[in-house]
Length: 390
Picture (spheres, rainbow, N blue to C red):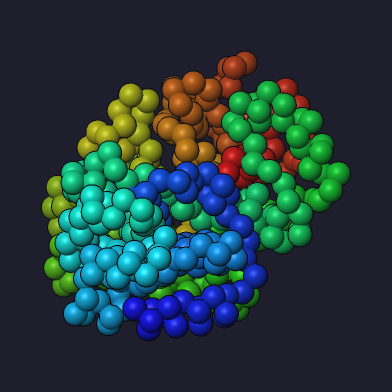
């Protein structure tokens, strides 16, 4: 176990200055079992290490362990937890838990037998924690670590510290909120850069965001989807081609037969592939109101605006980019559907038109998310402000 402490000490010593994520204040850290899901490259390891740094600063004995480490070739989670508790350990931080066989059974054993131990673990969004691990049902508090919101990116880039804003506050008080923000910074000066490279933490000092993002996407396809969904690695090129096709058209109304023909597979397989990409947080599926979970979505979007630049080397169509941003930022903690009026309907209530050139129908109750305005009025709200929801 001392080897793991040595590794943790080295990692904490090398930890760079960090942008505090909003999720840090949302988690109930008193819970004994906490799961944090997030897509590859989103910063889960950094999140755990910064929590470890906070604990050690407060004299709380914690231990970070990567379940992919060779240490676990002949040691179990249970044996580590047993030794850790006996030596006064309080919080165990387990990274990449899905790579460890029978991890859920061992976490349940730890929960039942070490009542003074808290465990925080990270995993892939492809994991279906509650559906596939009933032994943890009711015991684990599950949270999602998203990419940087526009607010978090703006705070880092400007050195300021704006709080998040709820959706009801935006709808009711957006004019005053925008004026207060605009007195301190020009948000539109940062907005285009965020859409291109601000969602993933690669912008924090790395030079080639695009190369890192491509590597991450391929690891998601080849490791997480292949491993967790038990897909033959030989079929990954078909999944990659489907993603490439989607990137080139998004957002669009899918013709499943044409998509199946483009990757030389069946309609049913394409539908499964789209769900895999959705669970891996590479795409978003937009359904008509009341049809969420049906087989065919109304539209397919990329999961976040940064992904739209993967294959569009000559630039991205702005209207599509803005709609992808809106869907991404609202979709974090709201139900977003294709409504009868506007581009989107949120939580079964208000409808929104995104962008200045949208041809969607609207009435006096519809909100418009305008792209290049700093302060709005009445039902016209600056698009960038929806990036302050988390």
